[in-house]
Amino acid sequence: SRTQWLQSHRFKTTSPKNFTDYHSLMHFPKTPVPPLFNFAKDVLDHWESVEKAGGKSSQPALWWVNDRNEEIRWSFEELGFYSKQLANVLTDKCNLKRGDRVLLVLPRVPEWWLVNIACLRTGTVLIPGTSQHTARDILHRLQVSQAKCLITDQSMAPLIEAVTPQCPTLTSKLLLSNKERPGWGNLAALIKSASAEHVCVNTRSDEPMTIFFTSGTTGSPKMTVHSHCSYGLGLTINGRYWLDLTDGDVFWNTSDTGWAKSAWSSVFAPWTQGACVFAHHMPRFDSKTVLKTLCRYPISTFCTAPTAYRMLVHEDPSRFQFQALEHCLCAGEPINPEVISKWREITGLDIYEGYGQTETVLIAGTFKGMEIRPGSFGKASPAYDVQVVNEEGTIVAPGTEGNLAIRVKPERPFSLFTEYLFAFHTYFFIFIFYCACFCMIYSLIPCFYLTGDRGVMDQDGYLWFVGRADDVILSAGYRIGPFEVENALIEHEAVAESAVVSSPDPVRGEVVKAFVVLTSEYKNRDQNELIRQLQAHVKKVTAPYKYPRKIEFVDQLPKTVSGKIRRVELRKKEWGLS
Ligand code: ATP
Ligand code: MG
Image 1: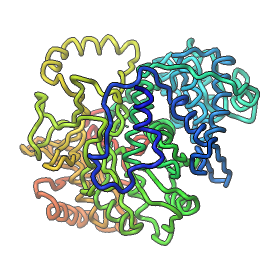
Image 2: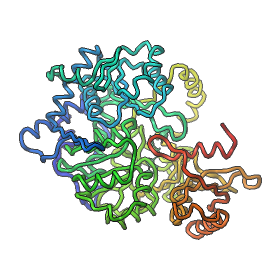
Image 3: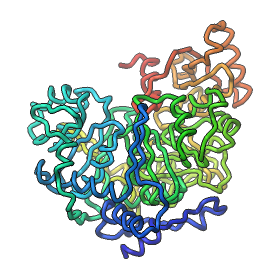
Image 4: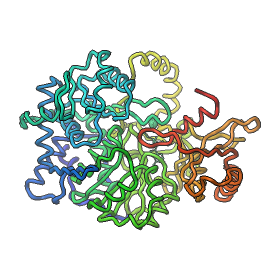
């Protein structure tokens, strides 16, 4: 039943901290789920009553700070109060009905969390965007989603006004600003004057809840629809088992508000456990500010991107006097073993890796108490049956490279996305494509959802990332994963970061090429000599055939807004493609 489900998975005030046998402790039914579920009502309001009854630690639900030393701390009761007010604004002032879509483009401000919860309460579908969007991005999002309401701040308003004449479905616009702007409702003023009496919509578990854009690492970002249960219930896995949170923890996740990782780690996962969501509104990622914040506040758990850890380990170790930090995590990209070991050297703490997608919750990870095998992102999460399969959809033997896949038959896990949403004109092409591929793909790989990533599972169930399927290099009959070569390169003290891609070669077809960002001490060295050194180094630390025959030094690597390396861009440049 719903109550049993919830009781056994979310409302524990203790978490399996430091357990030793994670498999025996993780019981997570992949299905069925309760027919009705709403995160605001079933989780947040629950924590509010626990808080009122004195059954919770004194940590707030949301702890927000910025660079000007301003601070906001909201309890679950306050979060409930303001979000109910905003829910009334959405239904009464914006005339939104259950199922209507709301585009939200706000940076890390407290109102971002209120909109998230108000959408849950009203059954409206949230589409988070980022302040780094261009007018074209916004137009695309508004037109494809047919959003009825848009919420943003002053910085984005002119850009949005330029495209809204082409968006007839958009009927209301709310602005977070202390100035009035014609054509916009003032978000803060409307919240303030609204009633806090609101009855939460009784949403079905399979009803659309949110639409997230993928990061756009391999191509155009895809719009991914999630239901109330896929993230709302599914992310319990992340909160309880991977983040290892309890209601006494203060958890800081640095990801931008526009990406699924913010739903994972700044909304659902920590609040399933009643933990405090900490947020620092930094205009952009700055290593010194991050370290200062970790020292100044009682942050117990910290999650950031591998690219951020790569920057942090170059900071002065005397800055690392943390107040309460005990658990560090990363996700979104592979993390180099070298960075894990440097972080351990400086802080005494391990980095626990997580692997997942916008389309999923945590697919695999290293969990507390588990042996960390650097280079592996851990074992399958109990949310999914994860396998490595070949092109025919057959599970391959341990140690063999294949497609990382999630079993979806006989039962599709509830914590998987519902569908991709496409622009109307692309439906036609997709339809044709599917008609052509359906019989073949469906008959060949009927049981699995393919992640698009390649990997290996070892005898003990640890998963090793090889690369995105498109990034794997085929040179003179060898398959080479870029991650392994990048790991070898970063071990050399001249390398701050690198991206490895295929490059055309008349003899071998393609060869390994590395784009390397040098550490400051090596910037002015003789480049030809450095190339020779780096090649010799890679040949020494990994199989010699993997060494980069071509190396180019660059000031920075092309990255997505969320900080992921876009190898696709470098590869296209190499192959002379636009
Ligand atoms: P797009 O699908 O638009 O190309 P994207 O795949 O980067 O972008 P996300 O859903 O944000 O969009 O990222 C999921 C992908 O990130 C995974 O498929 C995988 O390639 C990569 N990834 C996430 N975590 C890890 C990890 N720990 N190790 C290796 N790769 C990871
Ligand atoms: Mg993807």
